[in-house]
Image 1 (cartoon, rainbow, N blue to C red):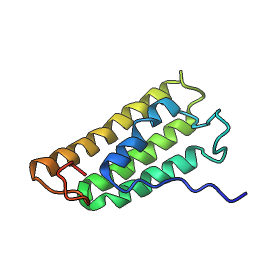
Image 2 (cartoon, helix red, strand yellow; image 1 turned 180 degrees about the vertical axis):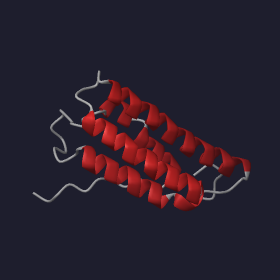
Image 3 (tube, helix red, strand yellow; image 1 turned 45 degrees about the horizontal axis):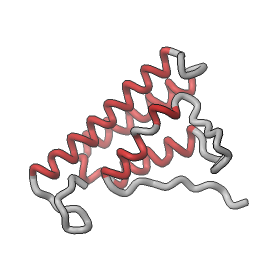
Length: 125
Protein backbone atom coordinates (compact mmCIF):
# COMPACT_ATOMS: atom_id res chain seq x y z
CA UNK A 1 0.00 0.00 0.00
CA UNK A 2 1.23 3.47 -0.86
CA UNK A 3 1.66 5.82 2.12
CA UNK A 4 -1.13 8.23 2.89
CA UNK A 5 -0.56 11.78 1.73
CA UNK A 6 -2.99 14.27 3.24
CA UNK A 7 -4.58 16.89 1.04
CA UNK A 8 -2.86 20.21 1.68
CA UNK A 9 -5.25 23.19 1.52
CA UNK A 10 -4.35 25.74 -1.13
CA UNK A 11 -6.87 28.51 -0.47
CA UNK A 12 -8.35 30.23 2.56
CA UNK A 13 -11.69 28.46 2.09
CA UNK A 14 -9.98 25.07 1.81
CA UNK A 15 -8.01 25.87 4.93
CA UNK A 16 -11.26 26.67 6.73
CA UNK A 17 -12.56 23.30 5.56
CA UNK A 18 -9.50 21.75 7.21
CA UNK A 19 -9.77 23.67 10.48
CA UNK A 20 -13.48 23.47 11.37
CA UNK A 21 -13.81 19.65 11.41
CA UNK A 22 -10.82 19.45 13.73
CA UNK A 23 -13.17 20.41 16.57
CA UNK A 24 -15.09 17.17 16.19
CA UNK A 25 -11.99 15.04 15.62
CA UNK A 26 -10.10 16.26 18.68
CA UNK A 27 -8.21 15.17 20.64
CA UNK A 28 -7.07 11.90 19.08
CA UNK A 29 -7.88 12.35 15.38
CA UNK A 30 -8.60 8.65 14.96
CA UNK A 31 -11.04 7.82 12.22
CA UNK A 32 -13.30 4.86 12.85
CA UNK A 33 -14.68 4.67 9.29
CA UNK A 34 -11.91 2.41 8.09
CA UNK A 35 -11.14 4.77 5.22
CA UNK A 36 -7.64 6.22 5.30
CA UNK A 37 -6.44 4.39 8.41
CA UNK A 38 -3.16 6.32 8.11
CA UNK A 39 -4.91 9.60 8.94
CA UNK A 40 -3.90 10.70 12.40
CA UNK A 41 -2.92 13.73 14.43
CA UNK A 42 0.40 14.03 12.59
CA UNK A 43 -1.13 13.99 9.11
CA UNK A 44 -3.88 16.41 10.15
CA UNK A 45 -1.45 18.92 11.61
CA UNK A 46 0.89 18.54 8.64
CA UNK A 47 -2.00 19.50 6.35
CA UNK A 48 -2.88 22.38 8.66
CA UNK A 49 0.61 23.90 8.89
CA UNK A 50 1.43 23.38 5.22
CA UNK A 51 -1.97 24.83 4.32
CA UNK A 52 -1.18 27.97 6.30
CA UNK A 53 2.13 28.06 4.41
CA UNK A 54 0.20 28.06 1.13
CA UNK A 55 -1.82 31.13 2.17
CA UNK A 56 0.98 32.96 3.97
CA UNK A 57 0.91 35.87 1.52
CA UNK A 58 -2.86 36.24 1.96
CA UNK A 59 -2.88 36.28 5.76
CA UNK A 60 0.36 38.18 6.30
CA UNK A 61 3.68 37.34 7.90
CA UNK A 62 2.64 38.11 11.48
CA UNK A 63 -0.64 36.18 11.28
CA UNK A 64 1.18 33.27 9.65
CA UNK A 65 3.64 33.12 12.55
CA UNK A 66 0.74 33.37 15.00
CA UNK A 67 -1.14 30.55 13.22
CA UNK A 68 1.90 28.25 13.39
CA UNK A 69 2.31 28.99 17.09
CA UNK A 70 -1.37 28.27 17.73
CA UNK A 71 -1.18 25.02 15.75
CA UNK A 72 1.85 23.86 17.75
CA UNK A 73 0.11 24.63 21.05
CA UNK A 74 -3.07 22.89 19.86
CA UNK A 75 -1.23 19.73 18.89
CA UNK A 76 0.61 19.66 22.22
CA UNK A 77 -2.67 19.99 24.12
CA UNK A 78 -4.37 17.29 22.08
CA UNK A 79 -1.43 14.93 22.56
CA UNK A 80 -1.70 15.42 26.33
CA UNK A 81 -5.49 15.06 26.47
CA UNK A 82 -6.81 11.70 27.61
CA UNK A 83 -10.14 11.98 25.79
CA UNK A 84 -12.71 14.47 24.52
CA UNK A 85 -13.82 15.29 28.07
CA UNK A 86 -10.32 16.30 29.15
CA UNK A 87 -10.01 20.07 29.84
CA UNK A 88 -6.97 20.14 27.53
CA UNK A 89 -9.24 19.14 24.66
CA UNK A 90 -11.40 22.22 25.30
CA UNK A 91 -8.29 24.41 25.49
CA UNK A 92 -7.25 23.07 22.09
CA UNK A 93 -10.71 23.64 20.65
CA UNK A 94 -10.61 27.24 21.84
CA UNK A 95 -7.36 27.61 19.89
CA UNK A 96 -9.12 26.25 16.80
CA UNK A 97 -11.47 29.22 17.12
CA UNK A 98 -8.44 31.53 17.06
CA UNK A 99 -7.34 29.95 13.77
CA UNK A 100 -10.83 30.44 12.39
CA UNK A 101 -10.63 34.12 13.38
CA UNK A 102 -7.31 34.49 11.51
CA UNK A 103 -8.81 32.97 8.36
CA UNK A 104 -12.04 34.99 8.63
CA UNK A 105 -10.11 38.24 9.10
CA UNK A 106 -7.95 37.56 6.04
CA UNK A 107 -10.99 36.71 3.94
CA UNK A 108 -12.80 39.85 5.11
CA UNK A 109 -9.78 42.04 4.22
CA UNK A 110 -9.61 40.47 0.78
CA UNK A 111 -13.32 41.04 0.13
CA UNK A 112 -13.18 44.61 1.42
CA UNK A 113 -10.20 45.28 -0.86
CA UNK A 114 -12.03 43.56 -3.74
CA UNK A 115 -9.09 41.23 -4.33
CA UNK A 116 -9.96 38.53 -6.83
CA UNK A 117 -9.31 34.83 -6.32
CA UNK A 118 -7.61 32.57 -8.87
CA UNK A 119 -10.86 32.34 -10.81
CA UNK A 120 -11.24 36.12 -11.06
CA UNK A 121 -14.02 36.41 -8.49
CA UNK A 122 -14.13 38.39 -5.23
CA UNK A 123 -14.68 35.56 -2.73
CA UNK A 124 -12.16 36.21 -0.01
CA UNK A 125 -9.87 33.49 -1.30
